[in-house]
View 1: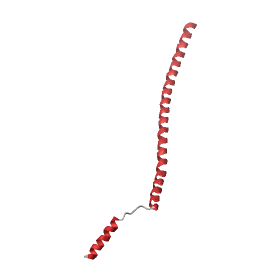
View 2: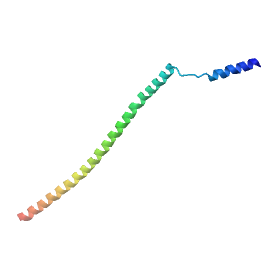
View 3: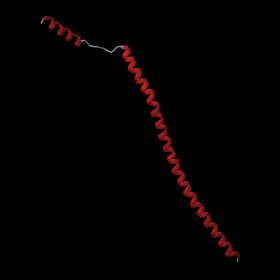
View 4: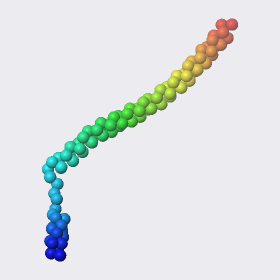
Amino acid sequence: MNDKNALLEDYDAEQKVEKNLDFRFLLLVYMVMCVGFLLILPKIYIKNQIYYMSRDISKLYGEYSILKEENRVLKQNLENMRFKNQILDSIFIN
């Protein structure tokens, strides 16, 4: 019985011993985190750049569409003015 109690006391004492992290483990954890950041940060940067560029492209395409429609209206007005000019010239000449 004495051996059993001694064994249990040794086991309890071993369980109570605090196991601190050593420097190498801490260094390993920091290195893994740095590698993770080095892999993730460029991806985030590239996605942000793609987002901002696509937003600019969308804005420019909207402006392009507006200018194209405005150009069509101006061409139609010019054609109407030419037509009126030709009619007025033919009326005043006769």
